[in-house]
Length: 213
Image 1 (cartoon, rainbow, N blue to C red):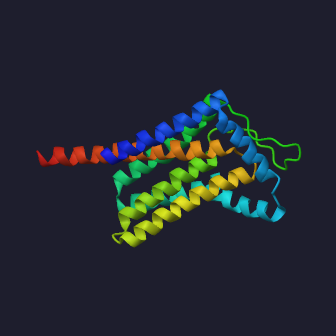
Image 2 (cartoon, rainbow, N blue to C red; image 1 turned 180 degrees about the vertical axis):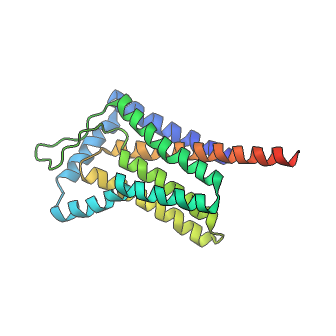
Image 3 (cartoon, rainbow, N blue to C red; image 1 turned 135 degrees about the vertical axis):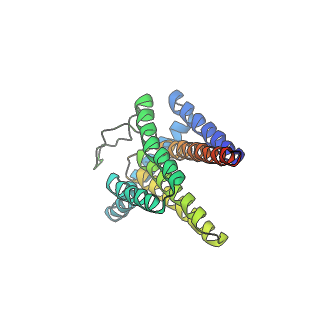
């Protein structure tokens, strides 16, 4: 529980710092525009196609399919606490993302020759948040399932790489600024650890209560 709270506090602090910079137009927003312009000037049709494939790893269709499979497997295995954790982490996290977008109502990057026009708000990145929650939860389930520390490390590294690639793809496609992606990772980690800590606390409480009967 202590580790979970430390991760939650650290990630929340990081998100708060990024959000404050975005609200007040601090230097991070200047870096945002410089990075967005630098990437936009270096886009090519081939890389755009590749980045679109990567960003689809957090698309609504793909995320829905994977989520349904996870729910079915957890139900089949009767892993009720893990199911509760997943239901809190993912649907709850996406609702949180929606509320944050409305609260900050930040306009997305825009260029005169942009190919794709995005309608929703920019901060934080919804795709990156979805990747953080989905692959973060998959990493947690994988770490629980495997006893080998080598496999655990591979699973965690794989999840981290996937999240970073999705975040970068959103920037390359001119869908988000750097701070949008960093904020999504931070708030996603905070929400993930909060939910996991809450469910684990509930599980321990019930075990302790049952042993005292």
